[in-house]
Length: 354
Image (cartoon, rainbow, N blue to C red; front, side):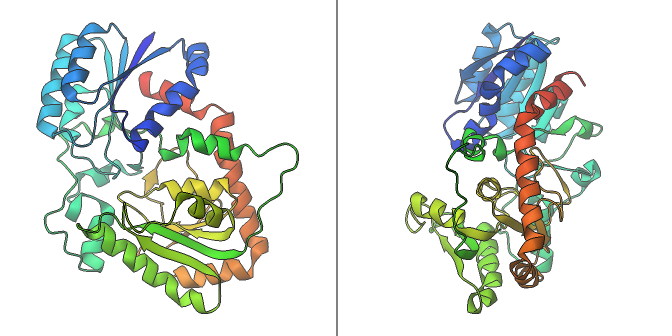
């Protein structure tokens, strides 16, 4: 079989979604007899034209999140009509569990989310802002979303086409970080108790994302009196700490507090596991995602979405390192197993042979 992976390649998130096809190309060929070709196409028009010329059996579509739902429907409907036998797999570019592109469901065989609600019935609910997270913030904290909304109606009967794909954890840099040198490896000294460096978005556009992350930083402040806490927020392009400093600090941290971002999982979740930190994070119990490093009490420590128990849980695990260490090691083992056991190829098999 021939597969085409086509779409946006300019940003780091798109690159992370494409990367496992490259890393697993031999495994896909050997186990699934699947030969994968890549084409960069930054616009829907380019995607449509390339699909006309390619005789693939399967197409994985990864457009930019900036494309309008109406234009996406026009192009992908045409791609479907041009070849009814070819399987179309849409890799949704939206970070959230929700999407603005559910109008595409009738034209694709699978609609892959980086993180999907475990209970598909949740997709039938109307959430303020479009997601369970934004709805929580609006109702519990009275956040004003000022019309901000990432969501769309699901055509009746098509919710079963929404499937969990793979998340940011498939990025190549994480695989490389997980591979410790065989000789001469020494675990970094953990001099920082709690780490939480956050991006706050753009300074000239302080949306709910900014407000939520400022609330997270406020929640961690009571710990500063008793522990070495490294926590701050910075704006894109101006006040973020240098990357080298960021990595030096995270490697030296016992606990990494990782609040949600635009969506639930973040780069920081995987960085923390690579560097043997205990991940403390708002509960991910509602999410289906791979690599699944979010097993409550086994691979990370869940806290309430309003951060009410954050201080208590951080204090507990800092006082009981013997209980934190098994969680740290379990998380690393689960993450390593994802790559070593070829879980990406297994997921592709499930997606195309459903």
